[in-house]
Amino acid sequence: MSPAPMPVALLRSSLLSVPHGFPRREGGVSPPPFQGLNLGGSTGDAPAHVEANLRALAAAGGFPTGRLHTVSQVHGDRVVEAPELDGDDGALRPAFTEADGLYSLREGDVLGVRVADCIPLLVEAPDVRAVAAVHSGWKGTAARIAARAVEALASRGARPGALRACVGPHIRGCCYEVSEELADHFAGAFGPAVVNRGAAGRPHLDLSAAVCATLEQAGVPRAQVEVLQACTACTPGFFSHRRDGGLTGRHLAFVAARWPGPKTGTPGAFELS
Ligand SMILES: [Zn+2]
Image 1 (spheres, rainbow, N blue to C red):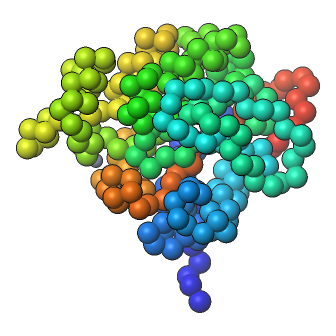
Image 2 (image 1 turned 90 degrees about the vertical axis):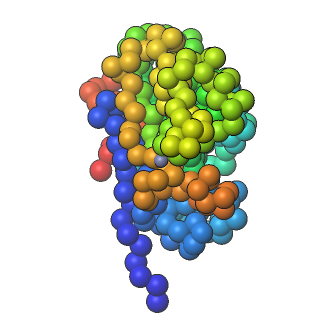
């Protein structure tokens, strides 16, 4: 008999006021090389493991599995609105479209993005009670998908200056060695501070600095953007596509449109346990 899994461990932002979380590997039922809470279905792991892990995440995060929206991520810059749900029977929903960011103003909706080294960016717009979740790897970061998310929320009445955001665990400048060509591109687009030279003089990219610069240019004050410090490649407890040579699991960062304080007419709102 295999030992019981460890509890699910969620990292949280000190800035966001809505329910959210960035899971680590702990918890879940997947065996190596997906050991722990693998939340990615196209990894080679058994679908039954991934579903059990998603249900464990939902239980730990206090959200109904049937309200979780995800997208089929394609390293682009498209940010789309989550569709209205036709009831909630508790079933897990497949990705509703190809995109790399999603947002919702619907009370009770939960948005998720899958990552293993890429940046999971969670955003809230308290003034219009909207949330967004964004997958930003180097391609999405270069395409400034974070600004697309700000624009999408602004199109629904949110003031960029009122947004709060959190950059979750990803591969950081300590470990993310890139080609000279890519380093040059990022330094030209975002400034020299996004590239550092490791001990051997090779270029390493700081994706979070590029995302923070993008958000600031889009009108989000730097003080309203938090960057969690863990590096998925060298901090124990994370899946890392780079470190594990592609054969690894996925994390799923989530954010829920559930706001503190009363609001009239909130069908589908749920209570956090
Ligand atoms: Zn590192």
